[in-house]
Length: 243
Ligand code: 3Y8
Ligand code: NAP
Image (cartoon, rainbow, N blue to C red; front, side, top):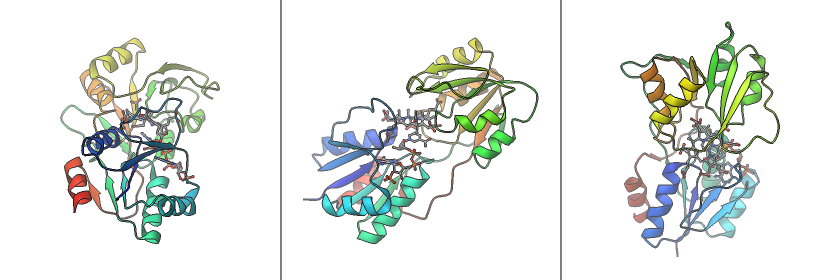
């Protein structure tokens, strides 16, 4: 009986889990356990790191995994790299379910930077009111730019005070709405939005809101990933699983 491992944490992973449950497939969704209450899923869930490539190899063999679908976030580069390496070591076939990068369109005012460090470097100017919508893990890097007022959007209540002298926190999880994001940006008099190029629909609302308000966006490009088979539609993944 095939056993599919879905590396989760995205809207697309949850939609795939729903499709696999509806099809009666034997599948497990995996979360790292980064947030307090990860979304409930219609298939069995495992939570926690695997223990690097060796741990993932042991898991694949121990659970008799027949297919890996890497449906993690484009910025989850370590997980995606480990999955490619473990798939190669075990011979378990892997496909990534990813989403195309967002592209600037009419009315967008983007300043694109290659990575988080470049985003911090780009904030070397006079004080601004910055919506830092990049989650929790990289906040400390922005302590190098204490002159700005930051609006932080976090999934969980912060366990420690963010290392930014001027900040406000909003606790919310996506997917978000452009109208709510516009109201949030106006309420906090935001004049710059910092975003990862996540792609997909769950975080795009802040870009729509910035465009509507004529605000500039500092857009952080995705990390490079090792070559692997990729799909952008669930139907492609289901066809690959069926093959
Ligand atoms: C733990 C599991 C679903 C999945 C929903 C998507 C959409 C909503 C938008 C902003 C951007 C951000 C962040 C974001 C979004 C979806 C998706 C997505 C961005 C959950 C979830 C887990 C995480 C981890 C979390 C990170 C953080 C990033 C918040 C669940 C809710 C900023 C990415 O506190 C922390 O440690 C948070 C860590 C990794 C990035 C960071 O550096 O802090 N996601 N997010 C997963 C695990 O344990 O394995 O659904 O409960 C999932 C979702 N968050 O099925 O509905 O698909 O992208 N997630 C970014 O895009 O920049 C928010 O605020 O505008
Ligand atoms: P990462 O930096 O690529 O991975 C770091 C380590 O976390 C991995 O080596 C692995 O630990 C563990 N890990 C990551 N994802 C896992 C998963 N789905 N199941 C089990 N272990 C996992 O990962 P990340 O960027 O922190 O992302 C963590 C989770 O948040 C993922 O589910 C991702 O899809 C989700 N997410 C991330 C972002 C983002 O901006 N990075 C945005 C939205 C959602 P071991 O080495 O011990 O196996």
